[in-house]
Length: 179
View 1 (cartoon, rainbow, N blue to C red):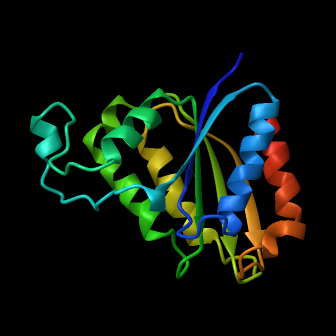
View 2: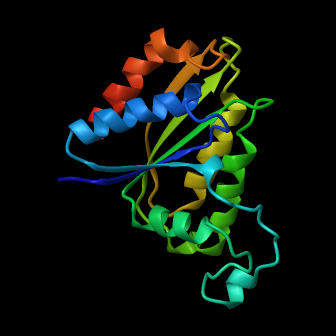
């Protein structure tokens, strides 16, 4: 059965290494017959959470009026969520962090999502992505019925395009096909 796949590309560089891996994942998932949408978060206006809890007393509506409502609606409708980010000081990009934090408006409504994670880093050490992955997994751990399905590690890439010949390209494509 076809699934709705939403890819959240947290790369600040359109066509950057992690964004390119998102495209590979999308190709595989589309080839497998799934409905796929990729959102390049940098291209949206998404402010950080204010922690005001306006959403708590207003049926999940956020006090901040920006593109997050549209993104959140798409997250809610998706069967599969793909979170992607380059490693920034052993964590996720600010763009992806803002999206994750803003899900607080409706986090209790999220149910039964499949999660995939895509990361890239300049370093090529065994532990370079541990904290980054933990940040992404944090969202899923708070959502009822979440299941992790896969992780793509693009280590040792920094400049745009360095991912082109990396094994992560094939891994992302194949993982998308297996959704």
